[in-house]
Every structure is written in C-alpha cells, then in structure tokens.
Length: 109
Image 1 (cartoon, rainbow, N blue to C red):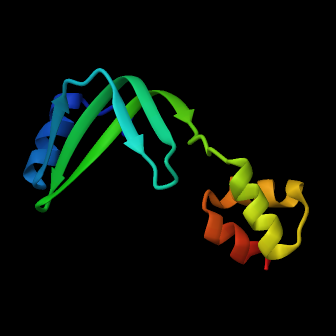
Image 2: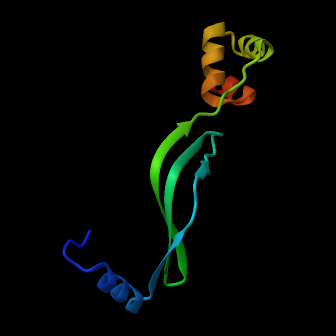
Image 3: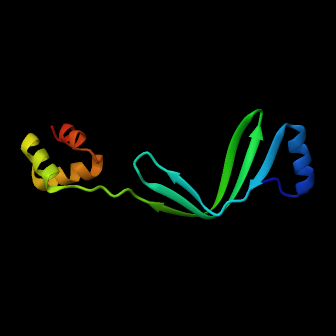
C-alpha cells in the first residue's frame, strides 16, 4: 500500500494516530449469510484493527461459498399451483427463488 516505508515505521505512525492492529490466530472463518448460505475462508489470516474506539476485522485467505439448499416438497408446489393457477415449473422456480411458500404465492399472484 505504501511502498518503500519500513513496516516498523508504519506501525509507529499508526500508533501515533491511535490505530492498533493485532493478529488473531485463526484457522477458519465462517460468515453465515441471511439467505442461509455461507462464506468459508480457510486457511485464513485475521487482523483486528482498532481505530477511535471502533473495532474492525481484516480477513484474507482462500474463499469458498456454500449456497443454502432449499427443500421443496411436492405439497408446496401443489399449493402454489392451486393458489396462483401457474404451472408446476413456475411454482417450483418461485419456491426456489424465495425459499418461502407465502412469498412464492405473493410473487406469482
């Protein structure tokens, strides 16, 4: 980032500005997303940065994403078809997209 600056001098400058960095020993970081999927970072390097009372984390490593599996039952597909008069394919697509029976019905209504 700042080519040519000695890392020790950089640490000193950051300390004067009230910024501290601490390495956190970690082998894996898992971020659970709102949609049920996960971001897995492994192996990882984690740095905790404290600046003006705020803590933040810098994470680096190999990233792998896992998507949430949506279990769609035949009953759910039939319910969406009955309520919206759509095809089974449209009902299944809406259920996969929303992950929720009521939301799928609302989407197709």
